[in-house]
Length: 616
Image: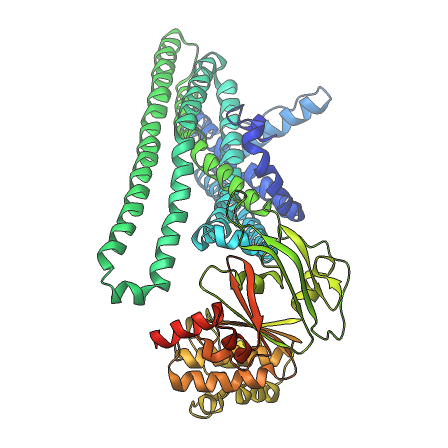
């Protein structure tokens, strides 16, 4: 349908994704119909203003005339003709025309203004609602995407799709619909006026439309790749700003302002360069459009003057024709320039639909678990992040009893964190199976599976909200008393008591108003409140000072009590009390046993212990 409205300027493939997004507009069909009627009103009044000139010149300055005789013939045509004659006499033929004509002009302009406001307001209202629903669905879809997607796609790109592309796809559509419908109807109406006034001159006017269509096709093909690159560059700019905002301490500490400014300038200059090309093309198109229209106007004037000399036309009709021609220039220029916002609209629709078409993480589970004891089993598990890369886990097998504290140790890259990420299915195994209480985790619903785990990691993430809401995030129905109990268990009672806002104190973006130890203990309080049967600790005490580590360790002891715990640690002093220590290297288990037992063996663990002591 769109390709027909644009006279073949855009193909079905160009408009495919945009037509998908129109489903968000369908619930508001009634408002669109009213907007369309208002647009028709704008076009009708705009066209009539041109026709207004002919009777103004021909009858307005002549003496009042007698009322017209009614046509005795029957039928609809005769009736309409009688109405028209009576109406023209009422406006132009009586002695009262000195005030009826000005009032009639004001009425036409007033109706046009009301219709223009109504059409713009209704279409903008529809676009705002449609954009909000698209963003809602995009955000819902983002929540279903896998960890792998979030790791491979920077936040700036996701933000661009959700904010800018969604806006451009529908808001541009609203503006395009108004311009395309209104100006097309205005041009059609004015062409009808021209044909009514002088059909010979109208043929000359019609000859410029094919030329304008060819001009639009040329600029569409030239600008498609430029507009697409400009949209991608905006996503890159979002990424740069987001990275510098999050890493501002690193930038300042290492004096990276020059590099940061250079990265920003490079992307910004690209956007400026592409913007200049788009502006240049847009600016060049208008003079070309006007030049084509001016040639047509010049030919019209030539023929009209010749007809006037021969007595084929009146001066009023000639003036009305010229006014109609001049009024047509604006809508024609708008229609000629419409391909740029349409191109932007279609490319933005492609980006939105591309995001919505991203495959969510696989969740084929049908089973749910209740009253989980926490028994875990890894059975011949392989993990390979790249199809042709090295295995992160190689034939990994491990049984963990309910309530057991198991520590995973080994050098960086040995596969410890991969083991932790497998359990909530942030990572999928290439081969093998994982069981919880005898059930394969692949058969469990993801929400039910993840409800069994609480995670405390080195990379603590806190929301830009209050202390209370950050702790309660793991259990939204928790009371203030329950949140306070979790904070006390995490050694954060003093933090609450020392703030005038108490539980409801703001903590800043990612807990920026807290110390490192406090942030870690907030994440522990969040895990305590969740009360999950299995605890995952991934470097939970690394990079802390001695006092903070002591407080965190006390909180962790309370958290681990009665739970199956898997502890990943580089600092071996933090896992000496573990029931069993699993020593890993190259994705395999090379040793396992209690702390003292492994030291007596004098193997890999003992070597790690000695290396740690030397580093301390």
